[in-house]
Length: 334
Image 1 (cartoon, rainbow, N blue to C red):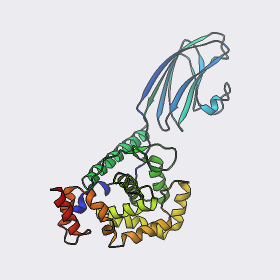
Image 2: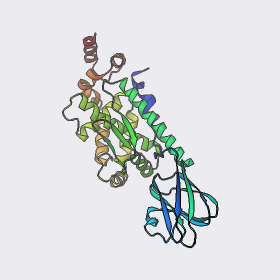
Image 3: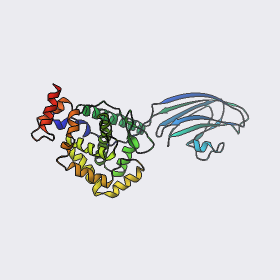
Image 4: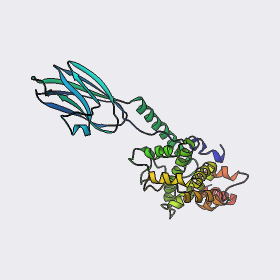
């Protein structure tokens, strides 16, 4: 393993995925009595977008049935835009794909009858093929991020912090006291706006290094750990150190050359701090092209490099860091 290969297997495989989760199937059975001239609704709460819901109903007589969203529920008993509408004579089964996350209702309408109806309703929820593919993508991406952190921990000395994907309701990436969070919406928006998996993957990779910059700098007692420009420079230096200069330059060159794209992303991401402005891109390019960048950071890097990493960098024919400083650090550990 060469020094530039410490995290290569993780970071070069990182791509933007269509991230959206769907929980596993769920089931519930309800027994309802609907008086003559009346209607009742059974609530099917918290349905995720994209899942398939199957409803099976058995009745001792004819009764109308509909499946509606929460907006349509507010207009009951009038039903104008149901996801399904039909009639149970003795048995009826139907399926719908949930168009948007929220609460839904099975409506049993006995207003035209003169006799009560005893109805048994079973609701089963299963992942759609699309939702299953998205869930698999989340798992795959999470495994890549876990591998990324394991490889990074082979280079630097730090206390691992969870790196997680989650639904946030907005395109963000951020660090808390207990985790680094990459929002699904952040990855999806990057790919949608940039229209290219490679460009979006490079942007996500830099974001991950940026967030780890905040974490590592805080753990290493660096006074400006929460400064965004410092985190950008740290991320650039770390990526150059780890052989990822081409990827950080590709990201920065794109945004520096296309300020309109940077502005479009900034607008889409609203108040998030991570969309790369043209000025930030120019700063990153300047740092990446500075041959003294890693040496500038070496007094912070060297004491926090794993011993195996120090030994590898010491053997480099054209070291990015001062060999004397590395040798001194190695001697102190013996």
